[in-house]
Image 1 (cartoon, rainbow, N blue to C red):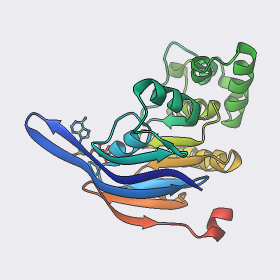
Image 2: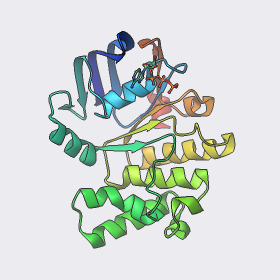
Image 3: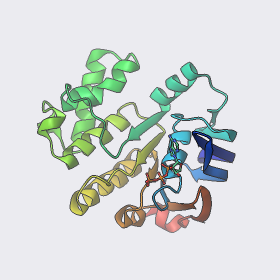
Image 4: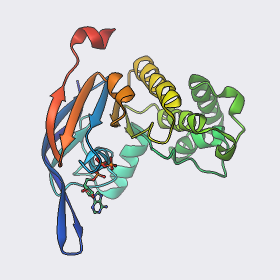
Length: 234
Ligand SMILES: Nc1ncnc2c1ncn2[C@@H]1O[C@H](COP(=O)(O)OP(=O)(O)OP(=O)(O)O)[C@@H](O)[C@H]1O
């Protein structure tokens, strides 16, 4: 099963009169139910690639299918509905809403989906328990450590039971020990919930946890490594 398929994808940003080719001729299939890490130096195009897969940005050329859906063909409303139902997103800087407590942050995407209140509350409690934060449910982000904030963000990303979770440098703002516990948590949830994770990172701890790895350089794929079936099943 293929979670993400990119065919001949290109993206150029225009700054004044100068064009920056952020991605060129990207052809890639990411396997479903695995943890794939996209690595590469700063400026290589990792964030651009995740933003295209997540429908936050649109390619100049090429086709992108996510969970079998052609996301380039969708209009903005269809795309935001698709994102809400099928994708979870984890950011480098956590992106929690500061006025909401941990449980409310996790519930927020479920409100957007129109889920009823009792089900929402139960799901948020279940997700906070899964990331080990039941005790902190009523705390606001400002009262949590960086690692705890990222756990809340992971609970939020998984709350709507998406098929795919995208995480852009999720350990970049954490010390290495906290980063290690976050990647271990993502690994565990990815396996338990059989969800596909695509993570951009140059953190060696994150790379070590990957099934498949894609390395990009100057906007092009320079290496694709796929774990063998034995490791994937382990
Ligand atoms: N909104 C934008 N406007 C103009 N240029 C951009 C924009 N976003 C990215 N770029 C350029 O596109 C290229 C790829 O950037 P991208 O952010 O995807 O790389 P990255 O690998 O994620 O880098 P980092 O690890 O530093 O986040 C870079 O040259 C960058 O300067």
